[in-house]
Length: 159
Ligand code: FES
Image 1 (cartoon, rainbow, N blue to C red):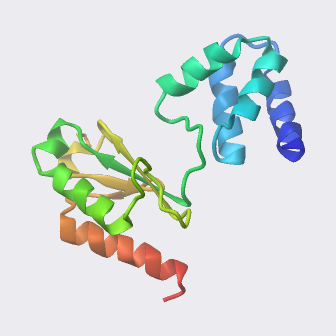
Image 2: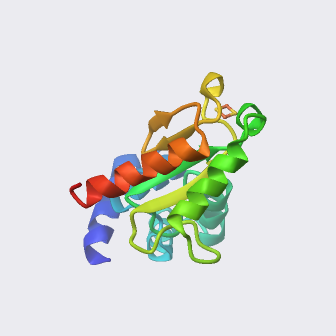
């Protein structure tokens, strides 16, 4: 955590004194260390003189923030209206089946994948839509997403 504290301090110093800096700081810290552990939240709160409860409130309000480590590949599966009416739930169910999450988790044990559902990716014409680390996969079906996930797994094994 000492290494991360140095990074976090330099991020805070960039924004110190600016109004409304909490969200940009949280964004930068998450980008740097991958998530927002409680130690980082406490440190930010102490440095900015903001109660931990307020920081936690912001983190849990915005879906882009995470208090747990995410996988190398973050899958955003859209379940907004346009995607929902084109059977996005079948695609989401297939992702869950393929990635075999442990009960109550949304990340694979090997740290490769994290699944998050979102309400609109802004590509409704391609519904149902999935993104993996910002790469867009449109007109998904259970079979197509199965193949996509197998390609990612294969690339990790050097296949
Ligand atoms: S509702 Fe899925 S991309 Fe808009």
